[in-house]
Image 1: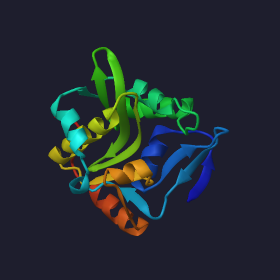
Image 2: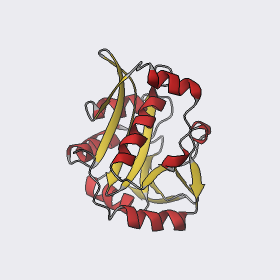
Image 3: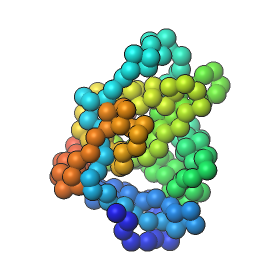
Amino acid sequence: MARKRSETLDPLLVLNAYAQGIFPMADEDGQIRWYAPDPRAILEHANLRVSRSLRSTIRKRRYEIRMDTSFEQVMRACGARSETWINEEFIQTYTLLHQSGHAHSVEAWQGKHMVGGLYGVTIGGAFMGESMFSTASDASKVCLVALVEHLQARGYTLHDTQFTTPHLLTLGVSEIPRSLYEQRLRHAIMLPCQWSD
């Protein structure tokens, strides 16, 4: 459900919106709209589906996984498609959130080349996934597995994926009523979770 319009994307405004279960996306004309879908898509970490081929890829260590080494590059790669809500204003705002410790990236590298990644926003024990990209087989999925392991180890209890897509459904994403999501969000953002040690 689209909410009000906004001409600017202030980092504090974005964080406050996430804390209320609302997130921004840009239209094709650059207009920013705010969304609070019902139902809401989440990934219960225990339900993450890891296929046999993906397990093989992880076991062979085809990719080196890094975190927060190329946040802006991940955003730009996620936005490099024909239809995207990730415009320059989003990149600037979320890079500021990254610099303040509220937005993070997980990256898959092959040598000097980043071939997959994802990024999202954290508040307390909630991770709000934004987007992912891949230019090599299973690269973004390997990043997701690494992310889930990272979040589980640090006590995060809510992994928001906003909407379902056919791709996300194959990974175990499900939907819950917005009222339940908001209840879980209120609890999660109060947790003293830390992204890094």
